[in-house]
Image 1 (cartoon, one colour):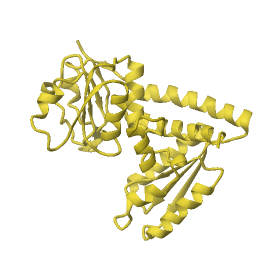
Image 2 (cartoon, rainbow, N blue to C red):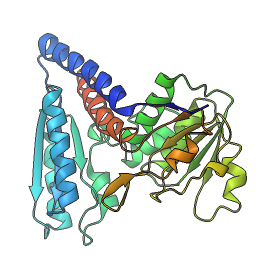
Image 3 (cartoon, rainbow, N blue to C red):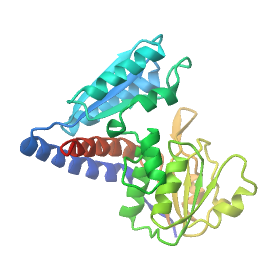
Length: 284
């Protein structure tokens, strides 16, 4: 029996409609328009596309959007000063630095300058620490989107074995923590994991976030597992994920496609994090 396909595009659209309704209510009842500022340093074409898409998404949701474009030769001090200005701007509730930054800039230091209350990416050390401690905090957009997809698909999490392939601060580590909070037994695998297949074949929930096309093959998947493909790769001009989609579809119980799976959820959750930051600002 073929896997049930989890349609991330449809899920993101439904979520963005609900976000737009909450934004409208916030405007009408409190006079607040959620605002997102995206800082782009340099002229990387892919980053420009991502930033433009985020701006369009904000506008469709009724949010205020600003794009701050800085020249590639911007210094660390200049970048950090611009971030501090956004921290003080009452019309901005979320601040995002488009990554990667030019090599001469320190991403870690720049991210740490963002106010934790305006860190809609969930990358600030304070928010990362809160997530680790199991406290209520801003969650990184992609793992948050994955959890939403698992929930709407009806995938049972409590007591299940979850395996995350990848240990990045952006996806792998926070993904594992969020699954742990939902009472999964979690294993993180990575490039140094011995006998990877022995781990993945035990997984009731298998999440791949490593950026290697077709890496997860059918013989790595437990029958009936929920397989979430976070990878975005380009092969011969086409976008594909980390999972051998056609083969795994015959084994898995649930499967996300690429494109159209996790990707659309990332921007939807960015909007959600910005909206929630605006709502929290009412209590400050």
